[in-house]
Image (tube, one colour):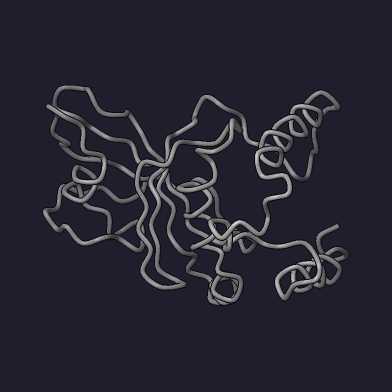
Length: 196
């Protein structure tokens, strides 16, 4: 079981143990209901993750708010944090959910709240898709699941066809040649054997 809090501290959290009921109440803004408390539990852990991801189960007085949400924080692994800072990962993720996802019909969790404070401090509150099954990069997927993924990629890419230079999308990785595309390609080549 993770952190539990009914604290009145209202500052934006940067780690799961900094979450407070007051902050969650404010950012979720559920009319006519009061957040009585919450419990957190980690969703994914490991050296390959760029963030700390927790499911937050919420206890509401009137039951009008969501039963749970997903909250993402920066990683606490120094090497991963350096990569996230170098590539602007947290800013890119927030801007994708805030500015790009609403322009597509791609199936992604709804962004409920996000705060950025420099390249290595952020918090995002997302809809909890607990009834969905995550992919398994080791086990792979069926042909049907791969086809469904391609359909979703089409929904992501089609609205922006021939618009990669739109200033609203300056945060997105550009295809080669760019500093980011070259760095990502090099990281893929260098990491392939250790990961395979």
